[in-house]
Image (cartoon, rainbow, N blue to C red; front, side, top):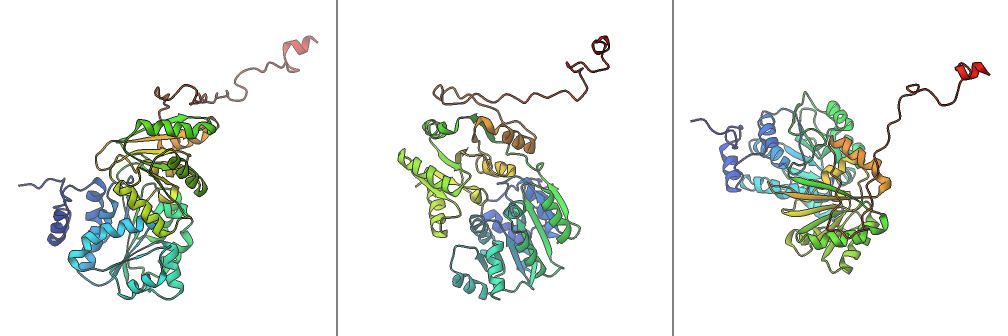
Length: 408
């Protein structure tokens, strides 16, 4: 009898690891898992392009654990943010526990001595942010000469955050005979450059075009005057009852909006670079448990927030980088459930909106939102008028060669 393609059986996964996946209720692989796992198990370099929230951790975690469980060596996973490092660690621990493989998390915001203790225990897998791992390298607390598997997770975000010098320094300390797996939601030129420089004949598997958005996320954009944003936010929160992830552009803005929400009577927490690691963990755990209805975040947290059943994502501010729009709204509409994303934009930001739409190759519907009180929304800006090419139409100014000028 033929085995259905929509299962982990037949992907080259060892029986022991299949049992672990079954016990974790992982029965049907996502498209990126089905495409990447067989390639990675063969030991080939892999470039995986898929939307946020499609199960990329399992896609590289299963081949990594299978290889490390059957031999020596170490795995290294580089990620852009602390939150993502913790999330990856939690997911990988579910796979490694049965094989007694130790893991270590090396991130900023936590005491160095605890991480040094973990590193001295010779972990099989290190999950790290590039900056903190380089700190340990400088202090000679870790050696990477036995790393056989390197994973660059959310590679585009790491490069956007300026981690390229740290990543290159780390890679130079790893044997060239390693296997490298690169996963990203967008495939920017900088990502392709690092892939061509440090990967060996990688097999590229692209589940969705770079920049595409989750199918289950309903999007809308509201044009609003800047001074009306707070009132609009209050009106929207009255109309939705579930959890809300709200993105702002700056750390100061996050603190201000969180105070505003608490003043409105909503339970709200903030997460950004100025918060300590315990504060960030408390905010994220509280949001997951429902202690906070609204989590206000900057783009530092756009990757790594893996929370089920987020009803609504609100872009209170447009992102600095167009690619971050995709990552923001990818926090909702996960695990087969419908999600909703609402974006605020001022009339003078119409060109920024068009850049986002160009990146996604899709238009964001402009909503009038009939339940919003009249006068709160601004009229959407008119589309720019395309000027005819130069010389297409005759000038109204008579030239010296025109009949009128000759008559003079």
